[in-house]
Length: 214
Image (cartoon, rainbow, N blue to C red):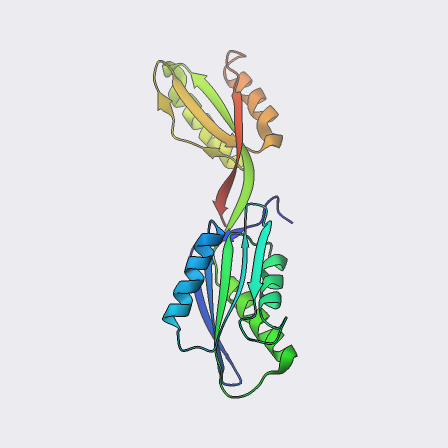
């Protein structure tokens, strides 16, 4: 499992048909339960004539908030299998709404479980994932005369160490800010010392969870 659950970059809408019933899956990235509720209400409004709008949502950086609904389908045949797919795919900050237009042929409990779980799984196959990881700020104050050289060195370094370089700030000196995995901080310090003959040392700052599109 990754350090943190992933989310998706943008909305996905995917439709499947099983025994004449239409299953329309909407996946939406959300930052809160309130955003998820607003999206669910919007789907219900746009598909007001559908029989069911089944829901699974997971929110929170660690995926600690979760809720599902069968919306009139037999208990445990819709929301739970939808949720299981999201959990199995290690997702968070996402809401899945599967709208069903009944086609007149009953699918049975097992058929519904497969249909709702499969609808979410297929929709996720079409999604662009956004992975998340914890990065720590490392700030390096560099004399202007050395700024160009350090800019090139740091750009190459972050590309090789799963890190991110923010835009430099220029004042009395040039201030570079790299966001670095904790395990790589000691190597950055050693490399900065090497580049500067021991004159410069990164100052370690805060840690934050950052998005990284797949």
